[in-house]
Length: 248
Ligand code: CA
Image (cartoon, rainbow, N blue to C red; front, side, top):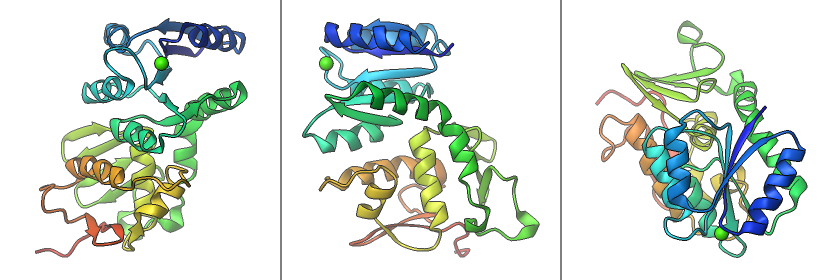
């Protein structure tokens, strides 16, 4: 049985979610504040399969909860609930480490579909790694669920980045962004296109939030994040991933 933690201070909404999730066969716990969400998740690091996290909470908000959790190495798939009319919150949520979002008010059927999607996402990530899109020579061809550049290996199956002897867990969204860049290896991709194709955002969103996301990816994959060699900024456009930069 899949276990869900619902973090929502509006009681009628929290109870409505509990009722409907239990009806769908989920085991549900609800908490009303960010602080109590962190307490529960720290006490049971593998106690939940999914978290539904409202952004607007009394005290510590959903963004802080999300970034603290990810900072502590907790990568439970998390759906954030954002307020309508704040598209920048979506990117803020992703930058904090959320895996998906839904704008309030939402339809229950959509929420259920998103949760099922999150549970299946690892499988999708693995399946959609198109072998032909990966610029590797046969001699160094890695296993089907991996991409290697230099001494760094992205394992899309385990959602991990291996850098020499270090392992960094990735969120589903981080893996999605890396996969997108890898599929466009060597070419510049615009912030707008990434917003549309990775995040599914068609609004006129503030694209600078993407830059925060890239700063985090650079901390993972670059030897010197302030002088990136793999994940390059293309001035006035966006980003370009170089799998094998020229030796300098
Ligand atoms: Ca709320």
